[in-house]
Length: 252
Length: 279
Image (cartoon, rainbow over all chains, first blue to last red):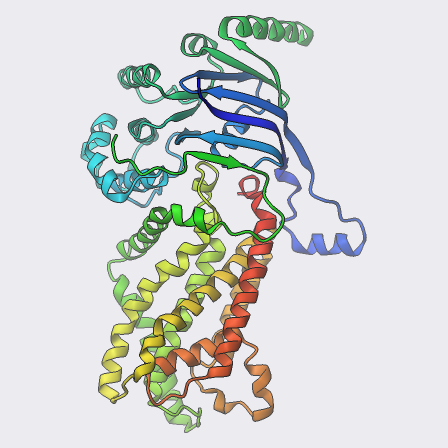
């Protein structure tokens, strides 16, 4: 087996939003008064080691704020680790948030092309694929409408259609299974199934444990920015449920 | 899908480096993205306005008229050795290119926040695009200039071949100043205002509607500390044969551009690590 993703001792500090000194006057005064503090930082990933092999379907679970989405962003290159190293082999199609990166003022067709170029295709190649993408998203009638004129469901459908159409080596999914109406959902699931059967490596974050159980072979359990456990799906889910149950009882 | 354009097969993501380090290879790899973002900017700007082409020319034309009228009424000598309208118009269009592109660069990170926080691409690209996209408006505004030149009988000489070089220097100056303020305005919004003020005052202190001959000999050295002064004069010189080339001033402009670019990039790299947290 060939490894496609490797994280070595990845640490990530993030600056917390409320501490930003947007006010220059305050900053200058606090420096003058000798009270200047560095903006507060928070350790969101702590010494994460991880290896994903080609074709593996990996699920990431954990409580809110445990660093699940962050880890995906580090793998995509959106966030750079503060220390440590990330190696990625192959093309990534990130679905961190469906429809992210669309320009609301451009038409649907122009957005499809722009998105494709961002994922590494030339304009010309994307023009060839526009038809298929529109067809899958069922937005043929909206081809020339600016994206701001679409409903949020349509935008999500468009995002899903593009990201899965480009057939990436690595697909990254962050809670994206509530797209559109029932019928479209089935269509999505069918397409996901196709990706599943191929050699695509999939990383997904979900709170839907039933879906994770069905879709993934390997699970990573994150807790407070650290890898708590890695292992087979059933085993990890059982332990995870027991752990959250005990937490629940302490709440009561 | 076949003949798919591949981005590198292996990417190593490392902590951001502290020293100045501009990955030109990486930028070249994403050249299609640069082209597409430029195309998007132009399209959004000129499609949203039916009269986009007119707006690009009407402002400098009106200002030329106003300046020319005042000059005639007051009889002031502004030390311009060539027909006044051509001199002012050419200065204004380059000046407006500079201000528009610099402002756009300084706001580019926020404008593209939805891309930056969701998809990976070299972020520096955001800061390169406005200087290229704004060239379109400059090009449009050149047409009335050609008409005026023919009308006034002012023609370029061999120096016209230096035009791309002067424009490149202007673009790099835009990149330098824009990058600096893009980075600073992530820290504090006050820097947006500061840039606005500088650009607003700059129109009146740069050689746009008067020639530096107006400035007393003693003051000229200080006057040419303004890095765009040399650019504005060189731009006239490549377009109009009778206008002398400001050799030393232009050399200074090039040096100042390089210094500003380096400073801008260094400061930008310091905030880059936290961009996704701040947007």
